[in-house]
Image 1: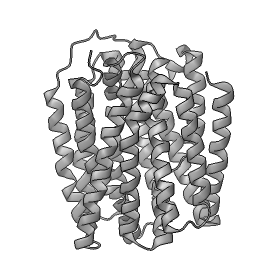
Image 2: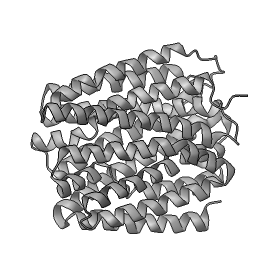
Image 3: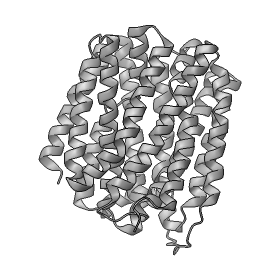
Amino acid sequence: MRIINRTVLILSLVSLFADIASEMLYPVIPLYLEEIGFTVLWIGLLEGLANFTAGISKGYFGELSDRKGIRLPLVRTGYFLSAVSKPMMALFVYPLWIFFSRSLDRLGKGIRTAPRDALLSAQATKETKGRIFGFHRGMDTLGAAIGPAFTLIFLYFYPLHYKAVFYFAFLPGLISVLLLFVLKEKKSISRQRPGNFFSFFRYWKTASTRYKKLVTGLLLFALFNSSDFFLLLKTKEVTGSDNITIAAYVFYNLVFALTSYPLGVLADKLSFKKVLSSGFLLFAIVYGCFAVQPSVPVIFILFFIYGIYAAATEGVSKAWITNTADENNIATAIGFYTSGESVCSFLASVIAGGLWLWFGSFYTFGITAIISFCVLIYFLWAVK
């Protein structure tokens, strides 16, 4: 049996093109927002609110996917909303419009995430989850390297033409939606039962002890893991260059993409716990170093380490979660976790923005490094 089958490959290509679209904008958004008058605190609030929107919706649509027995319609809808949101941010510069556009993009992510991950989980065995999620995350992140690379080249020839990038991002987003119509979904049994927008919270009562301990640690980490925007802002502050900032981000995503599958294989062979814990240690090192004023070469070294951290945690954590849940509740289990993660990220981004504004970036990065090290200790002690 092929580990990377047709469904996994198509879903991975969808994520690749969607992330080309998203990541064309990711390093530009904080620069664009600063240009139109957003402060660091407002940027943190915007990103936090956008993630909060995604978070609340991830749990609901994950539970809905399990309850109705559907995956692909939700996945298609989510990718479509994200695609159309890309050019919207460039149409007007009113704060409410910017918040709406960014939140629509994140809502799309919220709708698709849990059903898509449930589709991926269905293609794997417990012994191959790390590889499946690692391959998907690697392809996703390859798009996250291609997108900023395009932006870097474009801005080199057309400096400060941020709005044009938002319009260009619509094309790969549209391709990601069209690719989904290549897939067909097998009809599954609909498990109709009463539910509401917050009914996914009920899953915590029936979840396994392994799931609860794992998710508790992951959410504690997310509570202090603010948006990568702050790493980019710190890089811009040190270098004074948009191009170097975007280049560092491209480099990080390349490292992330190239190491995701190997680390997924390693997680399958060793254990999810060992690989994930190693990732947390690397994260603490990176944020501790960003707390001081790193030089340009050191910044690139830190982004290299940060790429390995991301590869060791993002796909691995979801693979681990699916192995602690019943097959009938995979999307709900992922949705519950990703909802909590996004709400925590909202708080983390607001806290980070406030700390930076009132006390300086040293406290933003330093406190995060300390807390992440504490989470590492929790994982080593409490999670099996």
